Image (cartoon, rainbow, N blue to C red; front, side):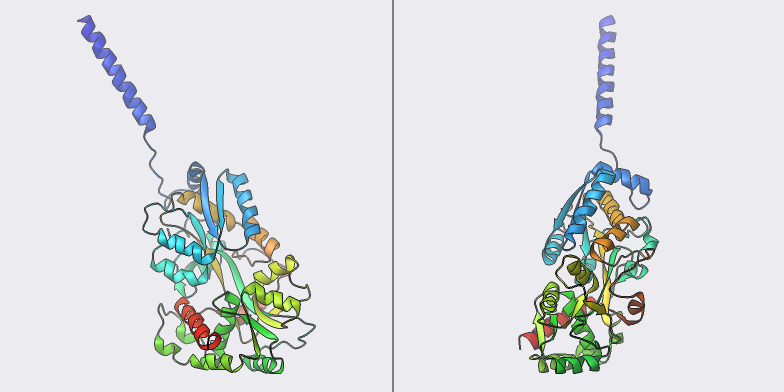
Length: 384
């Protein structure tokens, strides 16, 4: 009888130990990020231990911002600076995978519609990011004419305008007629990049369509191209083709700036942040001036999103919160002149004034029209 009791006791103790060990090894349930507190999200991010972030510009800034993030949170950043198209093709190719390799990425204008249509991003994240109300309200709602509804966090605002050498252009044009007259009087001295190679060239062609075909209002709200609305774009292509020998076509945003710096051209379209960065690096003379003409130039901004199949969503959210913090937005501006997405930062020394932005900045028409604009310009002007 004693032997039986001893055996039973041993079995009970053993089973208890096995149960305890099993309970200890059981995985923790994931927290509900949508309802979790920010402190809980930060703790979950630290447990995830790392974040993979994709971008295609501002490499110097993102290296420093990543180092700041690692020092603050102890979370490793896998920073990938690659070609924009390659970045998005990779994200799209992985969209049906249960687990992807990208946690967060910058979302540029021409990719918003495609990625939103494909349901690439997790969210909405607006209710999860601290100080979300301090980020550009319009960019939380819509980007490039596409409703994003809080899925993409504003990262920075950008604006195009006319960049010129004041030693060679004494009275820079404000209206389309004035620009047209200046180009005719100064052949080859106005340049812009192939719109398939950069956004500053896209902005010029966007303004050209506005001025030659009757404005931009009719495109607002369209999610697809309405062919009848683009039926008279041949007027824009005819304008550009008839002046093909008087215009200088460059191969990139930077190439336009370099040609201005070298004296080949005297005026071009540029991005405010790109121009400031080139100045800071000594690739553009300090006397260069920039403004938004009264005829208008396009502006908008870029955002950041968390991939729906990210294995480290908490870390991705904390990284986005870090980049959009007041400290980092100020640092980005000081390093690059890149206009912050935050609305609670007072700036000085900007290339473009807030008055210019408020009165002369144009909103891009919806992305499908931009895609059509690029292909039609290349076909009807550059390849003709």
